[in-house]
Image (cartoon, rainbow, N blue to C red):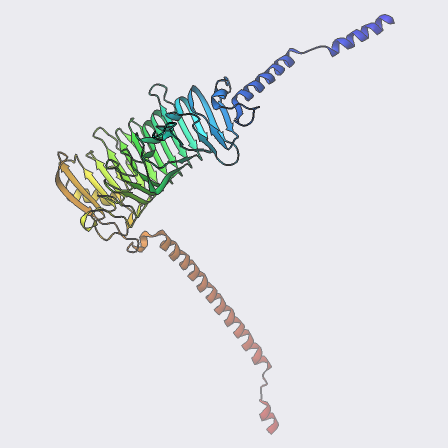
Length: 484
């Protein structure tokens, strides 16, 4: 009996102290996941002593999660210059409700230097600062001196994405040309819902906004570029397609109140195709873009002899309003190709101006520097009409002008087309008129049917009342009965 009791107690204690190997694995995995999560998803604060103070401190801790780092800047302002050189996904975002303001901490050439990796910046506002000289007579120093964001590496080819970010410019002409963003030899450069604000239309600045070259995929969507007077030989926004098969997309962006005063700055937006590429520039607005000394105010497009693309470069459904340039107000095309593969359909031109007599080419000018020997004025004119199908302009005459050159200097052919005015557009070309006519026709048919039904109903009622009245009338009138 005693042996049975002792055996039962021993078994009971043995059961309670058993530990399954699977529980060890789960516990270990839980601890490991917690460690990975803490290393990869982190807050950064320079006011909270319990948090890491710099993004660099977070990146120094290895992250094993496949989705990479997610770093939140919790303060309203953040001061740091950062180099990113690790092959991982990295998201850095502002996290205090409004955008976190990011400035350089010390004197530097760049705030962010992207060497490798896939970097996303979200909800951050970048600003320059001025460092006053410590000795009398010394000039103030712009900080950063060269770039806010710099990305370049032809071997590692990093990627950069910006979402809901703001870039504030600064007035002044400094010793060297400044770029807010300079990108070269990268895989992807993507800007979504970003804003680039100049120092003001009345304040000169030699700060350029974006320069991108040698990029496989370039995208600007719903971005705003505004309020700047720029003295910069490159121009505010320059995009170059240097790789075969590269793509440039600019969609639903706004370019507003920008004036160029440098003699070497060709346009507010300059797109150059140096290799076979694809482009889609649609739904954008160019308003009050002015170029005092050069080709055009709004958009310059250039291609090269070794661009063998057969696809059309699409620049459609854009609006150009009150733009001014030396040769064309809105569009200048410098083409070295012997094929006309542009699409300028459904664009809207208003109040654009140039410095040419009679306003020839005030909406668009084409410089064909290497024309085919088979081209004639009629052939080019026919092609231009096809390119601008559906486009309208308030210009009276010859707002799209072209010239072909021999040896890049002698004009051989010239001509023009006149875009239709919105008021003179034929009714069957206006979808709203067609919709209105269709709706009116439907209403008219319904009204006719209702009238017919009412007429039939009234006739039936009248016939019914007439038959009842005849039954009640006496065969002999009352007056005759009395006389008898």
